[in-house]
View: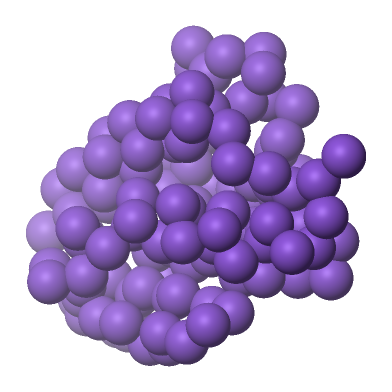
Length: 121
């Protein structure tokens, strides 16, 4: 059974999914418990828009991906295994490292980023 001692490792894996997008976005927070990215300034919304983050919580590590909230069609084709980890509309919770699901989340993040940036222009 996973324990909270696994959470920093889970966090690092999820953070690695987001790090490639940092150069094109704004890193709002980067510490041992939170990695948080905002998108560029949007003329349409007159502010920076939240893109994604990962957080170590008390009972799990969360991965928030705003593009799936904004564009729910991105979730079409999501595996039943990943679907079990979704909480609400845009949050995925993990208690242990799950390479196959993280790979799927990486792909979802990539398509979410492309759509997010396209729509902001």
